[in-house]
Image (cartoon, rainbow, N blue to C red; front, side):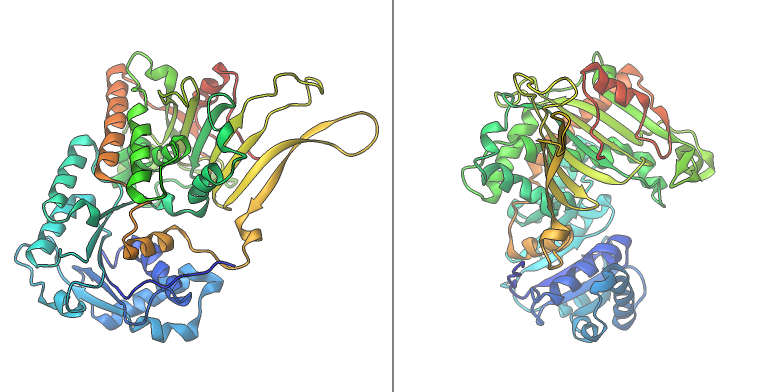
Length: 489
């Protein structure tokens, strides 16, 4: 059974409080933490946006959102007590002439308790909102500002955002959030490596053949066409989610389990990533764009058809990369990164493929490969595949089967989702699972180099059918190395 430690009373202000992120993730996350007794009744939750709405209407919107997100965890009888924490303030945070008196009146007086300002808005508003908070006198010692990804669209824009935010908030007050780092299995990756002598001695080029990191989505644009066509899979997913997973997989053990020590080790991985140039970009990467196909047995439109007016576009919806980390632990070991939309299924996995045994005793068909599979979604689990003898007479037959740690089966209590965990860490001031500015900029520096290589090589996306596992070139990239993408079952 999990034990939930209460946090101190706090105020949280959600800019973009009526938006999709607030309704789907943030308000339900706070509700669930309150149900489990982590949030004191004296805390305050303030939604703010430009929409004309009073607190009663906002509470009703929040109720519907929390009920929809909770499923069987919804408790009707508990809602009246929770909604007393909720307020709404109408304000245009980017308007220099906006009156902040109404918002300040809802906050608990003084600066001793944590004040969380969650910017669930478009990134181009981050600097304006932070400057407004500074002018309103709300950036004091207890303040924390939360920035959602993506932070910028390239290195230059990321630096501009970081510089603008730094005018108002110290780096220790800035929480750059990537919800993938709040997943239980992602955090468990460090425990598996550094808490078990079984794994750490094997975690290097001496015993690992390669690493695969896949974040596959089965959905298409789902109303995000304008944003996605300006971004693409590389900026939307690789620059933050996949690179963060790579860093946690490849990092060295920190001296202590503390925020800056962990983030410093991640930076070392980022700076060791070998640049991909125009000369080798076609060999080391694959760009794809989904075309019409079948999704869940039904016809699915292609990417260009989903864009408004059937526009032409060379935005990639699929990326596969063979990345290399140039250091002593990982020299020569490939890290295969893959993400895409309209794939055959929704799943996110980190696969550690160990090398074969030096000598195969049991014949060519036996297989002597171990792998550790860390599944992030949809069913969080850790599976270690080992070789065992199949029971029965008639010869010795070897089969690969997993030792399975399923979170749903192993923990009887509902465990918090990523946003629930991260919100509580923000209140506590724990920066371990949040990105430092130099980390964000180092990731953009590597991604910008790849984008420039694509442009220089005039590398257009390859079409792949909706409902497939991506372009044929992705499988061919693995086949050239004598490997293949792992697929459960």
